[in-house]
Image (cartoon, rainbow, N blue to C red):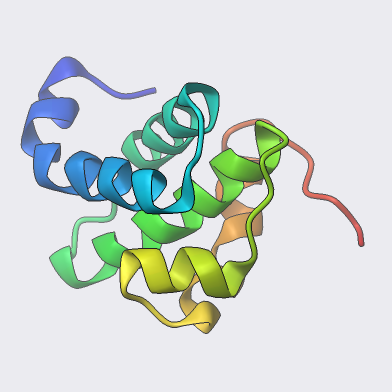
Length: 102
């Protein structure tokens, strides 16, 4: 879980998630999941936040049933696809979801 302070401290990253969600044409449910997962897994290092935000957006879209490819999400968040691939499953698990096995 996260605090209201976490939301304030990471407003820049939440805005980036929203902007990428706009480019990906994701609905409010996917955006909400992505923001919540990001805030519950915010890394201390600023350099890791972009990758965690991207993986959270990918995972949020999956949960909401609005799947987008890792490549599309990576492009929208300006990260490599590998950044998402390495993190999305652990983000789902840390938030109580079971990653798909496909």
